[in-house]
Image 1 (cartoon, rainbow, N blue to C red):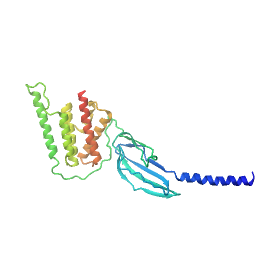
Image 2: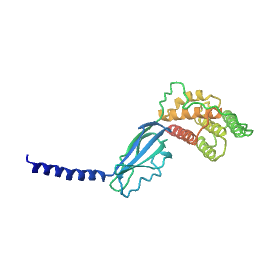
Image 3: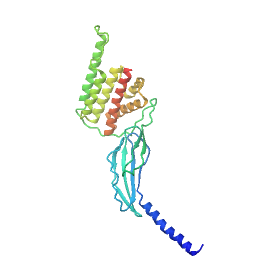
Image 4: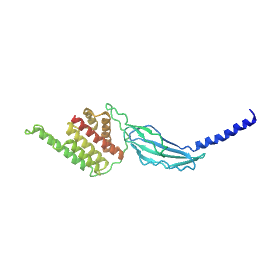
Amino acid sequence: MDKLKFYKIILSFLLIYPAGWVHSQNKITVKATVDKNKILIGDRVQLSLEASYPRGTALQFFSVDSIPHFVILDSTKTDTIREQGKILLKRQFLLTSFDSGYQVIPPFILNKKIKTDPVAVNVVFSDFDPSKDYHDIKEIVELPAKKDKTWWVLPAILSAFVLGVIIWMLWKRKSKNEKQPGPVIDAYKEAMQQMNQLEKSTLSEKQFYSSLTDIFRLYIFRKKGILSLQETTDDLVGQLKQLGLGKESFGRLSQSLQLSDSVKFAKYLPSKQDNKAVVDSIKNSIEEIERLGTK
C-alpha cells in the first residue's frame, strides 16, 4: 500500500467518525424505572424519570400531576446534570397504591415521538390463611390515654338501640297473631344509612371504629342470626367463615375487624388511608353478604 492510499484512508476515517459522534450527541433518550415491581397494598414504591438530550435543545421535562391507580406521596425537584455536551434531567416520585392487582404505570410522553416504556407494578395483599391465628398487620404503637368524657354517648345510644331490637324480636316470636315476625326496617338499608351517617360524622378515632364495628355486628345479627353482639372479634371471625365470602373479601374483613379492635383499645393510631380502607372493606362485605343471601 503506497503512502497516498494510506493518507486517504486516514482522512476518510477522521471525516466519518465526527459525523457519527455528532449524530449520537443529537439523540434524545428517556427512561422510567421503579425500585421494585411488587409491593403490598399501601406500601411505597419509588419511580424515577430521566431524560438525556444535547445542550442547546429546547426541551420541557415531564409534567406529572397524577398516575392512574397510584397515589403520589412525595416528589423531588428536577435535578440537572451537565456532562460531555449533554444534559441529563432526573426526578423521583414516591408512590403508593390501594388498588390490588397487576397495575401498569403508563408511558410518560415528552413529545409526539418520544415517550417512556410502561412500567408494571404488582400490588398484592399480604398472605392470609383463615385457618391460622391472626397476626397484626403492623407493629402496635402504644398511645397515651386521652380523657374523653363524651366517648360513651354514641356507643351507649347504639347499644340501647341494639337491646331494643333484641327485645322487639323476642316479643315478635312469642306473638300469636303473626306467624313470621321480621324487622320493620330492612337490615341492609339501615346498615348502609348508618355507614353513610358515620362517614359524615366528626367523631374521634376511637368512637368512629367502635361505631363502625357495632353497625356490622348488628347487621350480621339481623341478617344471618349470628350472635355477633356479645362475641369477641376472634370468635366472630370464626363464625363468619360459614357465610361463603370469597377468600380475598374474607381476609380484608378479618383484618379490618382486628384493626378496629387495636384502635378502640388505643393500641394503634390509624391513618386516613386506614380509615378509608376499613370503611370500604366493611361496606363491600355487607354488600357481598346481601348478594349471597339473595341467591
